[in-house]
Image 1 (cartoon, rainbow, N blue to C red):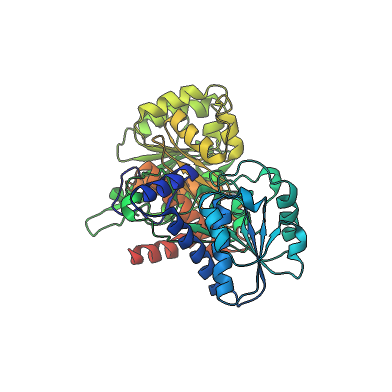
Image 2 (cartoon, rainbow, N blue to C red):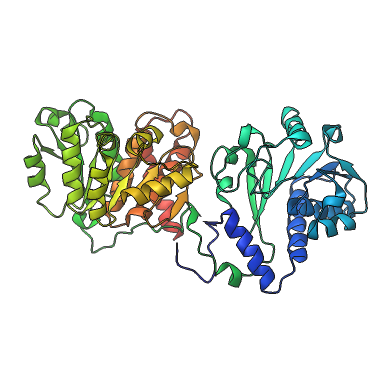
Length: 499
């Protein structure tokens, strides 16, 4: 992702600063900023007209360039014979640059910003503030936004809903309009994908405003929307045998067997050719009776585990699902990481290092980028509590990956996959019914199944999270974790057919 392609892929995401840089570079290349504003406003107007018939509309304009876009939108809607009113936050005399020029082009009344202008339930265009706003809405802007939400007015946002941070998705004091559509320019911003901001955006429409690809070529963003195209799934050939497709070994426990068994099912359905459960002897009947296609190996000690992994065909290991928190799990995790093979650490294998995370991180850094950690927010907080990351989830995930040397899958409704080199991907296809016990164990298994087939750690993490979300959507309401692996064959078939 840090490579600068001739055409910046559509899945790449621009930070606020990167979008400002693209605007400036476009102007430096000879494009007029006034022309870019005209193109932006025209694109929003077209999007609006594609979705709604002509009807009364109120355009809310702010004091900056977003407000300038609003004046362009209002002018074109009026030219198309829409009943249009414009409300301005602040003084018209205070407008500067392109916003002032477009305010002059508006041949209609400009009303001071006040909730009264929204009487009659018009469509509302939110062109108040842009993606860089970091303070809470106040005064008339706050009152207008609250009126939009309490009256459930149909709102269309320009760039981002006012009050949403374009970089973090934060909504200061939870005040922003709930929009039906958000029209943004060139590429998405992180705030379109990260909660809570994502919940305010509605449908996100990305439009071209004429910034040439040669300008975007010089920007090397490190953030992406997690979609196929960002990664490529392994495809077996007629030459492959089962060991070519990966031998995943999952370390299971005797007390909580379900977690490891769910991970095993996920790994196998993701394509792992061979799967072994390394478990206490007392639990062998449980695991052996679960699925006839797996191998079950009794493991009672670290020495047993060392002997097991003497077989170099075991190219991916999983430890943590269902594991007890404590020294034994920590020792086993360190041994697995020290092998230098692909590994997924989850649950107990993470929390076992709560008091000494640097011991784990040092081992991971020596493993040369083959380790994926899949914490939920609670596990993440315990493992990284000594790190003064601060900031929002995207920043925290990146910082954790850099600190640990692992690819970090920070799970949630907007799961983030971050690599130590700064790359990050935000996932937006997970349905809410994935919030069920065992779903994370299946994700761990899917990740291992892809790692075992040779995918690099970052790409495997991204693909696993996306497949997990698609499986959740396919299962639908009433989903239980056991449903997820069974949805994977159909999803994989469609995806491979489309390549």
